[in-house]
Image (cartoon, rainbow, N blue to C red):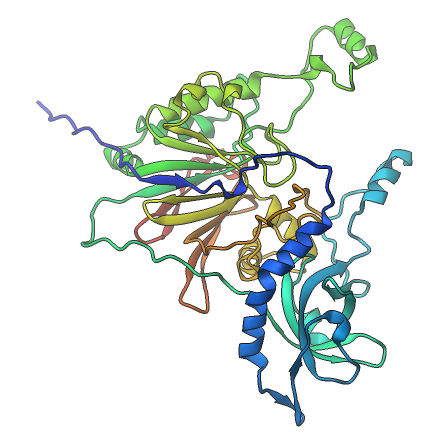
Length: 460
């Protein structure tokens, strides 16, 4: 008689959510300009410290570099350095006046993949005193976006432009030490990262989604696969769990015609609402929550506020999964920050890096993530081209504590690299692909921070 395989037991972790991105009030009656003042006030002292370390007592052609307090204190021909906020004047960048003008177009202008135009773009630095145009090969080769705080060293030319010789960034903030086990453990402890489920609610939902659920529940694969699945202590879903809304199809042409001619009440057509995707997602989550802890972040296509930070999707949207709320089901914000067994995580559902992508020349998403860490800004382009909440007391997008793991969801493909700070900080950066397109689940080992990918893509 063959012996039965022993039951697998899932590892339990200590999980703490950082409430940094949770909003207590939701007022949009204030100006957005305060965000830039708050950001500059918060990062100026840090950037100045790097500037002093870099340029104090430095001579260029016999002239000692001087520090000036304000942008308007820069004098022509004097070698100096100053701290301010970058503003990118880009003709291809959308603005609110164009959005209003679209109502008068027969067809709206096509959205652009990139805002960047090296010949026409102008880079400026500003503070509470004024604005100064930057020039020089150094600044043109740097990937910068509106909203990042930097220090620039150079001299003002006769045409009024500040020719940049060197530049300093805030760099990575301080990082807490990662817990080290007393002895090497044979038992792995993984956190699974997932994004872009794009649940449609169709009767034939993707086979990859079903395989994913069965794998995480330990109901699929060999005993080795089940043992690995039991080592996954938590699943973080980084946005776009629901597909973009589509009108419901109908076989009744007359009913369809009447719906199109019927006027909408308050601009909303209730007949176009389709509850099936939410119902399917609720079933999927409730199945998973019986065995594994799930953190659910909202994304661009999910039913949550569009402005960052997106607030958690209300548990009542998931009538079955809501009974696990507070235990194994944790709706969260986007961006999301947490600590799992002493390892700190910071991540977004993708809008932040997708927007940075439009400002820069390259396509390396991991390099863009590294830039945001060195700028200490999780959403640097908000509120310029990325919708966000108008903070009045604090810019919560400033990264005050360096994470151990930094992830971004809904990216074109999986990628990972280590980013190193000036004070021995080490960050594991991860781009999570869309599951609906790649069928890939990312696992990260909490002990080593090594990553691996499990693919559920069916071969056609």
